[in-house]
Amino acid sequence: MHVMVVGGGPDVLPRVEPLLPAGAYEVEFVALDQEPYGCITDVPPDLLVGCLRIEDAAGFQFLSMLQ
Image 1 (cartoon, rainbow, N blue to C red):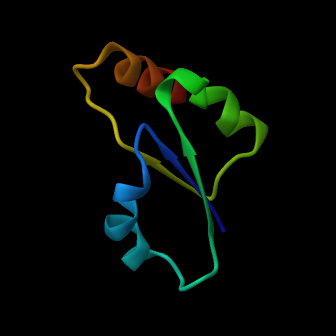
Image 2 (image 1 turned 90 degrees about the vertical axis):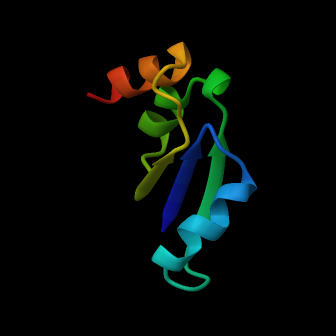
């Protein structure tokens, strides 16, 4: 299972790990300035976790692209 965390770091894992099968996933962290939409289309994740603030222009733009 490929998990992509956009806009967050390893501190997000304690909140996400209980939802995942033990040891059966690979986590990729992508910053908002790394063109996350391109990363998603290159290697689509099984699970996408967005750590975004809607009032942040980059976070809002990212959500708009996912539509």
